[in-house]
Length: 239
Image (cartoon, rainbow, N blue to C red; front, side):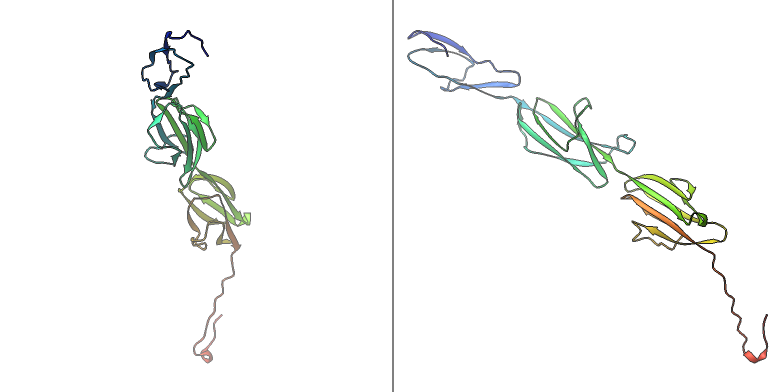
């Protein structure tokens, strides 16, 4: 509140902060600097608004080794408001995973982590770039032989052993082969994720979209029967 003499002419000036622009005075004057004559109690307001701002949103997709995957989108971003934007606008961005990928954080223009929360809230600055990072999922595949003396399982991504655990990126294939020990034979595969597989084939091909536990079952070699039929029966015999 200022006090002036009656009929005094004074100069008023509106000074916007960084990122904002002067719009007008409450009495309709539009110049940031104006002169007014005091003829009574007067109340004036300066109106400011944010300057135009650009929000660039990006999606960056990483493999399980954290290398960037080109041409693949591991997810997408939804934004609470559509452009045009102004400096100081309140923005909320939410990340959404595509199948086989998982959100891994928000990055700033320099690639530094801003937040690991799926929803990001902030006040917009001019020419701001926000990147949503997504990472390809990796699944644990446990492989067993039962009984252990019955044989081994050979995995193209692992070893030839009785017990092993391998890690496989989403959507990629694993080939297993059951190898029976002497005096044993392969019986079947048992485990989760085998609904569409031929469990009686010693060679198994799996597309990995979840954690799996797969067991190759072996049984002792079964006696082989030989039946000899004499035709006609009264004509002789065989030993």
